[in-house]
Length: 309
Image (tube, one colour):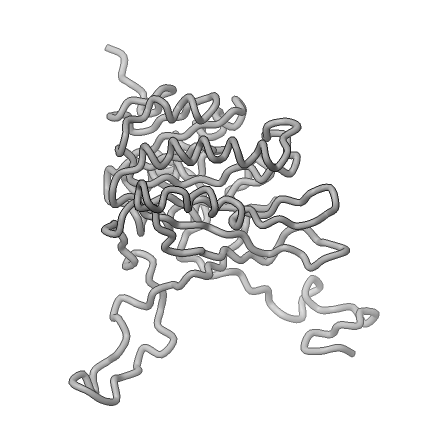
């Protein structure tokens, strides 16, 4: 008998991984009500990329996003989480439009009917990106984290970071003299600093705007338990999918681009075998050594490290 693949093209609740080629609304229609623990995605920003829907006005874009959000909220469990990772739309006047501000108005419509609550507006900061000439270069994106209801799963322990002052003690009250910090480390906060996926990143594929596995992994570890179902309506090359599989979760994702589905399937197959190369979540951000040919400023440069010449 032929062994069944762990990666399926069409959704069934028992699937370990579903990679759906087509419109995400078609995938969402097959997912039962309140069956998903985490909806985690990064939708297109409507900036003219090849993988985006053509000739959309910002109104068209928001209308489509509203349909996807409505289906995602329907499929989300009580106590589950929804994370929308967003950048900026730039219109014909080179005016920056923060998409998280526009889309929060859509999510807020479910505050009364589905108790959808905004828990964090997480800032993801990175050092490299587009070099702007007529405005400050953008070096961050935003993750809107909502929960469905006031009782929800959240476990910060897998993400804790070293204390800045681990030897600090309480100086008054009943805990006087005892260490004040959590022995597992401190809460990492709502500003996350790690690299985006550029040409020299170990995870880089042909997708022009893929997000790193680390971003998805942080949210999956904090907001889901083992064997939970993670849904990514705009799956791209499968960063959310591989993060889910590597951490013992199930996943369903969709993408319109057949080539991206093929890449996601290849990455997912490697992840299932424990062979996928990725940047470890615990790796510190690289700090270049000083006084090397790449880091030492030429004498002709006005900026000389610690100040202006």
